Image (cartoon, rainbow, N blue to C red; front, side, top):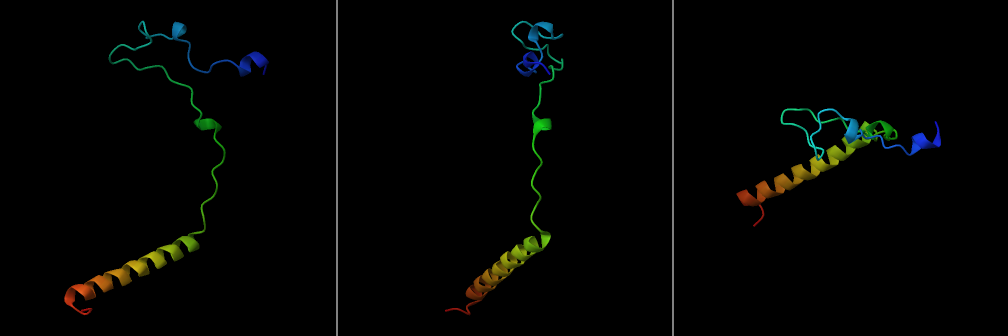
Amino acid sequence: MSTGDMHRNPDPDPDQTPGLEPGGGVAPGDTPPAESSMSGASDRQPGTGSTRSNWAAYAVIGAFVVVLLLFFVGYVIGLFD
């Protein structure tokens, strides 16, 4: 790869792209030219946490919600006056 290739713009040249109208627009119903993308250059994504710890967190949150619901039900029916 030469140094000239490193600084070349990856986007299509508007002067050589078919279908472009003056000003860079496209005709109604025409597909615009594709753009370059950086999605292929991303790094590997880190792995997710263990499912065991996820289920433990879900259980703690679920137990808290159940206790909270029982408290509100008890308050509504008059157990806590």
